[in-house]
Length: 571
Image 1: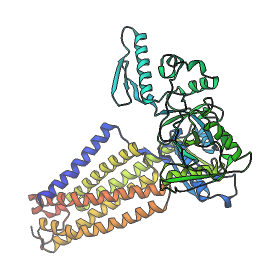
Image 2 (image 1 turned 180 degrees about the vertical axis):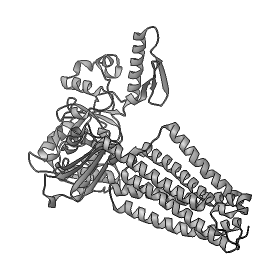
Image 3 (image 1 turned 90 degrees about the vertical axis):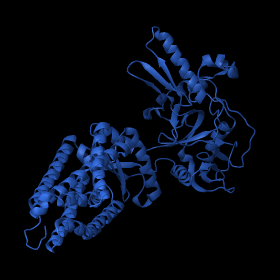
Image 4 (image 1 turned 90 degrees about the horizontal axis):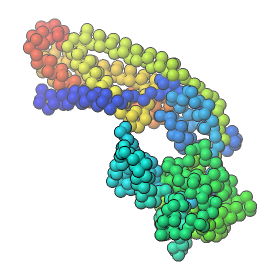
């Protein structure tokens, strides 16, 4: 046995111990799926159109919108999949708020065109923290922390200091100035509509600053009621709650990058759009989206009314000359309006679009809203109690199987059985670490099917050890000494073990690729356990057994290693 083999075995053992220690210190634990922690599973069927008219594009867009809604609900590791024209949604942990979750899923979204009043930037509230001693730490736009102690003798002064610091940071970042004065830079654009990529000059957030800021001196007296409403609506941290996102309200919404925009009341909805397509620009500048509006008052005329307002830079309605396209509480694009009116089929939305971004925008415009009205056809609720009972039953089944396998290995292979059990324990420790880490970092849930996959993996690992031990027995019976038999047997056994594990991996990959739902969980955990079995067989099994074979007690009595008593066996 080489020194490298010893180091590999010790390395695997140390990795398992370190993994368990890290998991305990970090407080990680596996995230349980619907069938183990309870929740609700619902089958949603499109009802607004006939089944023959439901397109794959509309279903795919609906699935993506539902994912966003579920993220807002705060459900960990939801499962959303298509089954034909139906959409199946599993929400782990949602039992008490089941009705609210179902209502949220079935709500039909509306595509809205809202004027952009201000670009607020990312949410500054995440940069302000307070510890238990009353110390407030503010991180400025450059990432430099500023600590403000609110435990001084004069709390009012401290509060004023905090307010000044906040306002200073807001001014630096341009995040909380809700009223933007449009500036005409004199530039022209050959496209009709283009995504704005540069920020606009911003005015202050309140009347006091308007009076003291030289750049906006005298502006306070000119603020209209609409502008004052915009100031009040935009001076919030975060975004407008979903329930307050109604068409006639001023709102603050974020785009896909997390940048927040202050938006005015809806000027028109997606009903005015007839279709939309994507293509590469003539100049090769990137992907473009080409919407086509309906003819007449219910289409292009209504859009041109909004375009004329934004093109003029009306300070009461559309001061930035940008018109945001909003779908399901998110800004999917906010192009600038570069003309007063358009032909209904000659509009171009251009910008730094990737192909996927352009296609998503085109799909949203084409369908005009959530393309399908959904109705719950089947709702299955799993209570938390039932989930815990299922989990307990699965754990008990796994422990019983592990104990029976361990007893068999010890009775038949004796000390060699200890090597197999040690390998199973190391594999189990690594599995726990990986599953808990994936659950904490990526929201990977452990379902009942996954538990079954792990239980099956116990048999896979036991088979690998048995293949090796039986090869050792054959080599020993051919007349070799125990240490030599252990080394020679590994060369032929590892080939068989690798081939068997590769077959299991192929099956796991195919199951994961071709199936959905619980079967994928089974395939994932079976594949993960099989990979760990390969690692244990390659790095731990042979060094551990070789170390036992060199013990004097084993060389004098090979039966301690599960080898038979024969005259031909050399000691």
